[in-house]
Length: 346
Image 1 (cartoon, rainbow, N blue to C red):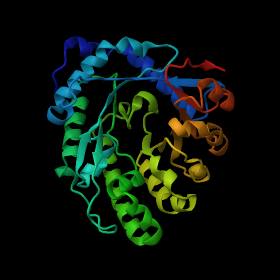
Image 2 (cartoon, helix red, strand yellow):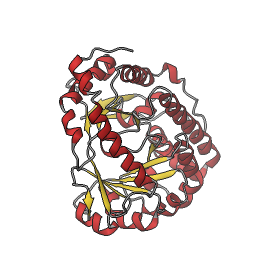
Image 3 (tube, helix red, strand yellow):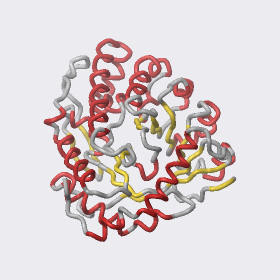
């Protein structure tokens, strides 16, 4: 799909020098994931996400939204040449926020007080119907956005997928505490619905993988979570609510299966107190990175000590875990700092 884009923006967003810089950073990041990079080098990433001033555009004119975001990126493209911090230029599909998948299953999703919310489903746990993705407004908007980006003819920006999230996040969004009780008291019913959810999430990822070049496809929020091509992402926010035994038996195999859609596995976003799951995380072959922010960042030492040597840590520094302390704990090993921290030897 050809979209309206100025000749100047097309030229900037196909700049071979900036593409070479981006690919150089991705190559360095790939070496880090492969254990080939200098173990004492702190890697820093702080990208730029294209902006459109009209919040309603993604829901009314998704092609125009893509165009405006690309024009905005072209205006800021010089920052992608930063020699010390990886500064990818990004488009982020934010349709319905973290309730994207809920809407596909039929939840009433609404915007209030500056963010998206969803209402719980009425059906009983164990009776969740498989959704018709094609009829979903969320998917129709995503398809139009993704086709517009793919057809724009620009090679420099990367495209962040909507928040497809993870099976437990989506289940809790749709059922609330009912799914948690069912996992303990009605495990067969819970397992049935969890599989239905995860199968749908896998289908969404596969559809989007087929629509975009591998070197421009990224999971959600690539401005701070960009990975080498061929890596996926899930959200582990709600895992703090369950025991290691419950996570290991009922959820981890599904999370690993979703990450396995990507040839290199991928990342799990964590933002709470999830350290009790580190032994399970360590055993998940498809889990190649964790992204820590807020409360999770304070557990950096435990993650660094407990995860495998080939599992990378993306850290958003915070008051309880400043960048300097993080570099000291890890000696820079397997660490990606999110923000405008200067990469280099520590």
